[in-house]
Image (tube, rainbow, N blue to C red; front, side, top):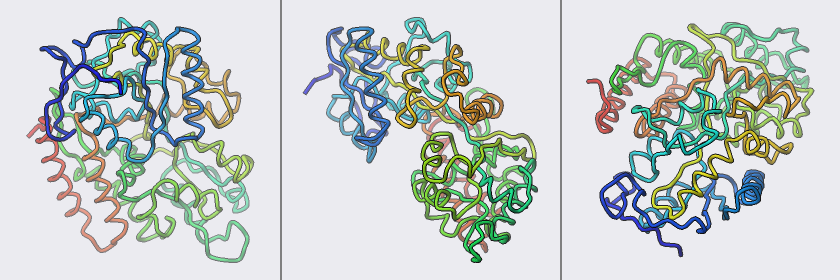
Amino acid sequence: MRKSRWIGVGLTVSALVLSGCSAGPAGTNVAQDTKAPLELWTRTTPGGAGEQATKRLAEAFEKATGFKVQVTAIFDDFETKLAQRAAQRDLPDIVMNDVTQVGTLKSQGLVREIEQGKIKHASELTEQALKSNQTPDGKLYGLPYSAQASALLIRKDWREKLGKSVPQSWAELADLAKAFTTGDPDGNGKNDTAGLTATLSTKRGYASWYFSNFLWAAGGDFITEAGGGKYKPSMSTPESVAAVQWFRDLGCKDNVIQPGSVTMPTPATNETFEAGKAGMYVVGPYLLPRFDKSLGKDKYEVVPMPKGAKNADVLAEGLSIYMMAGSPNQAGQDAFGDFAISADGQKIGMEGESAFIVQLPVNKNVDIAQVRPDPRWKTYAEIYAKSGHYAPSIPNWTPVRQDTADTVSALVADCKLDLKAELSKLDTKLTATLQQQGISAS
């Protein structure tokens, strides 16, 4: 086993602070060996398309630079296994994971700061993607290599059969959802379709993740920046209350959300849409290859979400490359990150009909229309550029997402709950979380 030369302090990974053998930033005092192979962990299904694409990128990187990379794909219990390696003082050199992890990894001391000047192609990154990887102090602790945003998928064949237009407002979206629920759009003579499929499980905060597409468009927010890197809870503001009420009514009054939504994580929600049990789905572009195969690309359409009370903001997400602390080959780490965000690396990451790891490019010099002529991908790119809304880079976003997911899911599951009271309780929890992280405005 390769042993990194750094020490950890703390009993749990949530309190873990890593440093070099002497004073200094995490991982900066490790003896360096540019011939040391790079151990790369990627959060994807072992043996799946994501692992294949990552290995393809690693092979191209090795050929271009001479640095060796060993790819390991892990999906289940990724964070737990990373914590175990941290406790063993033997982190992988590179981790490819969600951008929302940047604050957590930085606060735990598991990643080193990235010096932008050492990354040749960093100047080619879009401002939007680059900013998503910066902490509130403006420092860079991750390199974006893929971006995405949510769009509205609609069963086009159902919509046209019922004589409906693409919704341009929330009122029209609700109207179309009702038509899909009551109008027998699949023509089987049964009342077995829903207007909207929603991921409202509390697992991994899915309900918060999904609901953000409506909250931000209504002018609401989970937490609001109050200046100086401080935040205040915002789920009981009038805008947030209105957003939750409108969305809750889809399930509690209109009954247009699929049955069992509050226990469904994304795999089950995906299956609901592709099985013809729901007519609309708000989701990112990564499912296009799957739905093209299961439904047929002529059966559904990709359109921007209609504008809410404030705007058409939708969830923007991304994947990042993290340079883990304690690596004996920091030059190799930097070289891999630089290659992945270069125009050539981005195009390699976008190759294939399904085995790709770059959804939307983060390099300004890559035109998605040239790489993927399918106009639906351009639609997603335009939505991301105009309306993509990232979660803030606070020290730990996970408890904020989880607490809001618990409340949103409960409010849809139990229509008798006092909405304003539950959101006030949620804000109390969020205040405690912000205080614990040292970023509370109160």
